[in-house]
Image (cartoon, rainbow, N blue to C red; front, top):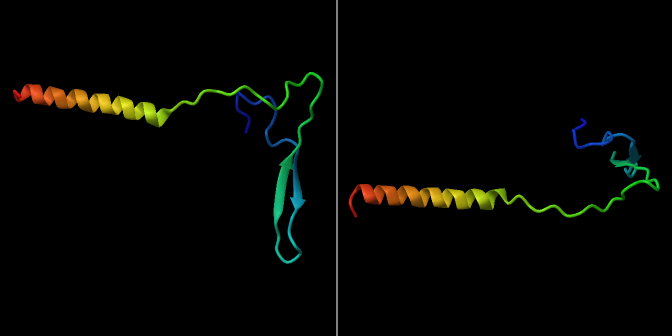
Length: 77
């Protein structure tokens, strides 16, 4: 299925190779891409990580700390 980030069909050019030993059926699939002089190449710049779990834990810690402080203030300690 094509996503907006795909320039071509990621499954286009899929080729099946028989890798079985005669007794067992086994296959491997490969896709081939054509590079031209205008191609940007396979190496792309690194993207920074999203760190979703770390950021969520930090937000949750702050939220929990704020709520505990609110409760302690409300009971007068």
